[in-house]
Length: 99
Image 1 (spheres, helix red, strand yellow):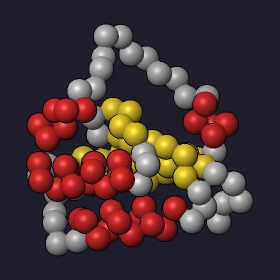
Image 2: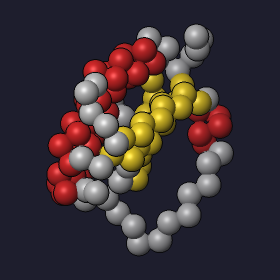
Image 3: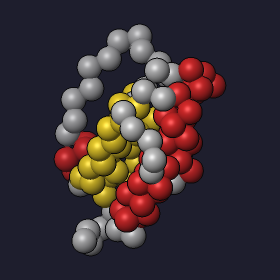
Image 4: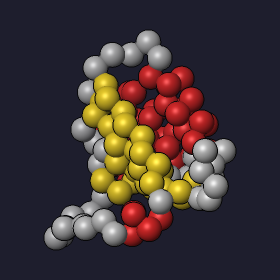
């Protein structure tokens, strides 16, 4: 168990549009922000870890053809990431059509 806040990094490949939208809406509800089309990140408390995992398991139950990975990393490690991006932006209002 973590003794301080960590960063939750959730990445996924989900083929079904309905399931993908449901997962992304859940991740937003728990306070994560979209950092790429299929990736969310945000600060979480130790108690949030089980809630995020349980929520994803509940949403994906009965579905197939998906892969969701959840990482809990320290803010220090996250701050050392390297972002290489040029002219890229996410259109949140078009989330229903993200593939």
